[in-house]
Amino acid sequence: MERGNRKARIGVVVSNKMTKTVVVKVERRVADRKYGKIVTRAEKYKAHDENQACQIGDKVRIVETRPLSKDKRWRVAETLEKAAESRP
Image (cartoon, rainbow, N blue to C red; front, side, top):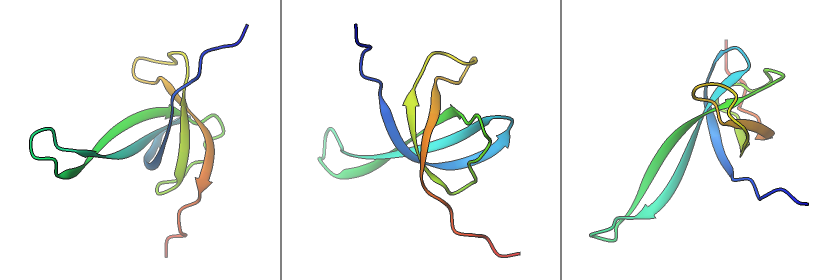
């Protein structure tokens, strides 16, 4: 028996201050209902980062998982692009 397909999103890490948790901002472009203008909508997800490998600015893919805490329902599947090194 096969499991259902899990939702996946691609976004940018905006915070990694929590232990084993990152906040990922996912942006999507949609047409306005009334006027049809393309607008950017953003949503933030808390995702589980087991190895604490993610840094702010990293582009990551997150996948849906079972509830891990009150707010955490996603986990980091892979890092697609590392953030550019910041200058000292």
